[in-house]
Length: 471
Figure 1 (cartoon, rainbow, N blue to C red):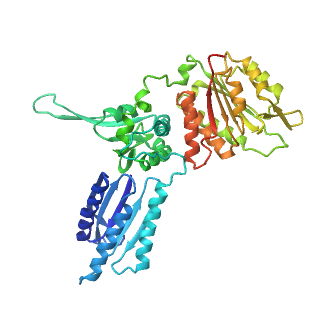
Figure 2 (cartoon, helix red, strand yellow):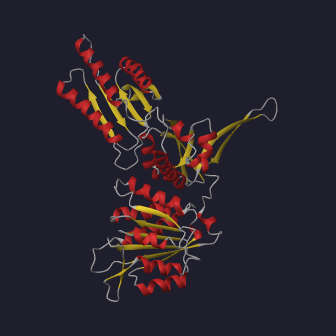
Figure 3 (cartoon, helix red, strand yellow):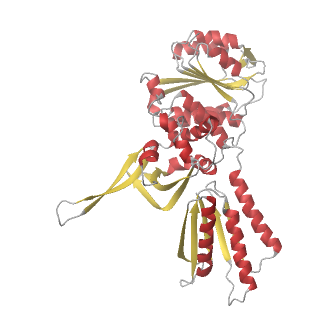
């Protein structure tokens, strides 16, 4: 949520509170306001200032609020007042951006213009949608299938990261007529259970997990779906290790359309098999990481990619279910031997791909050895009984993926060139989801989301293919 703290005289704050609430009502924004007294930044203990705190979803009203404060100060400057009180404003949005300035009653036209420009820039930065998730729905239109898929990407990210959600519930126990005991329970709940059944829109999230979801929270608020506000004063400790922080959730204008849409992920989560572990009949999943970085090609950050994958799986709640093997500088003869010896369910290749469709392995002297789509397709046909997924994290690998998908259930390739940062971000999200028990498709989706959250314009490069059962 957006948080505004305004300091001035009590009289000014009452006027600002009343006028601000009118702005929120006109814009259809739910807001909370509170006037309190705060210790001033002074060594004099008796010096205190009245403070107005405002929390609301989004930032659309900020320019209007700054403008009304300017008008209040302008009217005061034209009247006879005993003592001028400047109005201090601190604004903080969920994307981490902050705005802090002080408006006096004798501000010049140039200063007024700067205040308004700064506020408008603050709003524009918040609404910037270069991450590829921009919902174009008006209030009158039904939500489109394309937009619901974008929203599903965000909720898949929440489902993968928020593994422990709690609700604090109290109940009154009366053992006899004279004794009343208040029981306080800190119960686990699910994201679906909370959204559909909870009447108290307050949940407790593990601090580390919530921090990992800040990007998802920001986009959901920016697109008018949900606003989440972190409490700075309400937190709980569990087992002296995990810190849970309270979040208040506000349903924004688009939420009612989302939650009732037939394709919304939370509406179908029970109907689908969401566990990749179940897909493999409860057996451990063997992952084979392959890398080739020929000396006659541009260098890639393959070591960093593999470290990220290893870290995500080691931290995953289902880490005991995975066996990870990696091989660098892979040659064509190595590939078949590794598939025979290790019998992996997931094969991940990182390296170079050519615009003509070949993948580049290495020859005996470490230089490029291109392999055609038909050759790799024929190879994986021999291992279709145990290989369930092939991920080609290399440029122009879509043709290879199409050829391999004739024999393998799930294949991911890239439809154009992809940079190191995007490739690493995709791999991070992909294995983060697998480590939480998500399906291959859900892992693919979270990989795309991770590219978007890092503001890399390559989230449409990965393509997901499923085996055609007619073959």
